[in-house]
Length: 115
Length: 112
Image 1 (tube, chains in turn orange, green):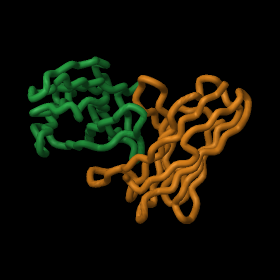
Image 2 (cartoon, helix red, strand yellow):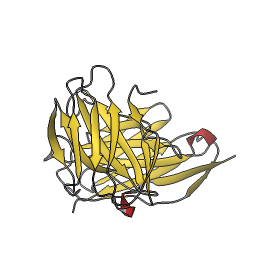
Image 3 (cartoon, one colour):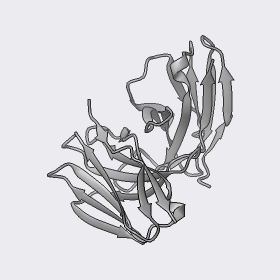
Image 4 (cartoon, one colour):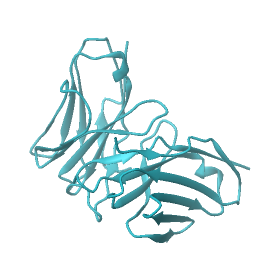
């Protein structure tokens, strides 16, 4: 157990719909990173939030957006869902942006299926 | 496009033998390198990180880094069936405080 919890664990949505995924970071952690992992691939960095501000973004379109709350929990929102958005969505929390001395702990992930 | 390359496998190793997993990366400025283990249907868990050229040992695991060759490897000694998983190599971009680039992983199977 890493202390990082994600909800829901599984979700089925229809193409064109919107979805919100949630992540509670480990106690004492102020940074949350979101990743998308397609089947058979490594995780792809979506973005990171540090102290409620976006702190880096990967190559994902603007319909992927996020929030971080004062308690450092975070949401990932995806609008206008496409079939290719079907994947495991992972959040990772850390004490500060990743540096040589910072370890990121992953939640169990949310499996999103778009039909 | 900065990349991290791994052989997808599967790599089959007899129980008790040494498993050797390899990874190359394209960004010469990368400074931090990580190995994660991911069991099927589970999230990645960090096994080791390495920053300096050479070897770093932790129990049965040894990470090796050669920055000149842009190559990082993971050795697993005395392989156990519980080591069967996908191993993800990850590299932290030097220019960003946040982004980690993952390889697509090598599937390791330890046969009894």
